Length: 236
Image (cartoon, rainbow, N blue to C red; front, side, top):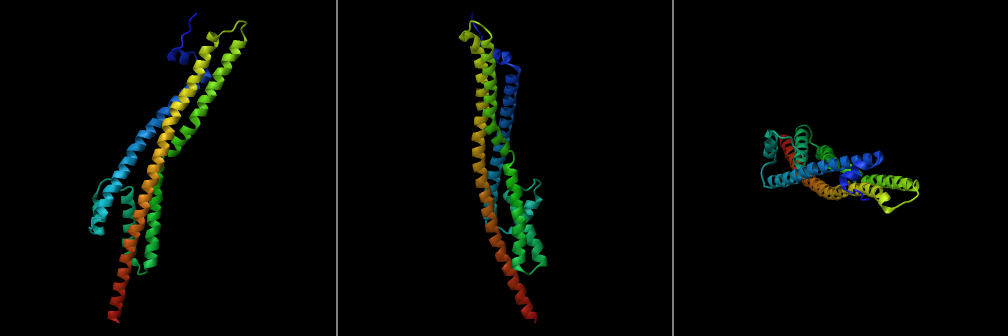
């Protein structure tokens, strides 16, 4: 007596609980790949945008002109552009109303720190979902495997003459759950580790830029203070 061990037959003949486990793992795999594709595109765009803006920023042009050009663009500012826009707008606001460089720099650094935190949150979005899928999928698949094997041996114990052909289909369908768990987990884990590294390096670039930009603004704020002091001394 031959036994049909084709994949479709095993899936259709599996117990309801094992089928539910397989559906969960299939859904997790689909969600995982959707997140992977979108996150890859997002990080590629963020890396390209950061490189392009760094070239513009360090080209030696006027910062106020660069700020004006960013304001004219229809696309929303993100990443390094957003950090620059926040820092420069805070500098322009403080420049008009304060002669205290320490106060100006504290205000600028607070603004850029908030902008950095928001950009980091955007970059890290859905990474926790990949981590969850990667860490739980093998255990969900293992649960389906254990349940399927338990059913196979329970059915085997109910007959007088047992044979391998009787238990093979149940064990095979149970092992499929483990395979599907690994199929869902492995890409999610690889993508999570890769994307986490890219995000960490991008955030590091943002932070370095913010520090360098703050140094430039600090020099300008001290220059303003020196000019104002000279004017007041001349008037006196």
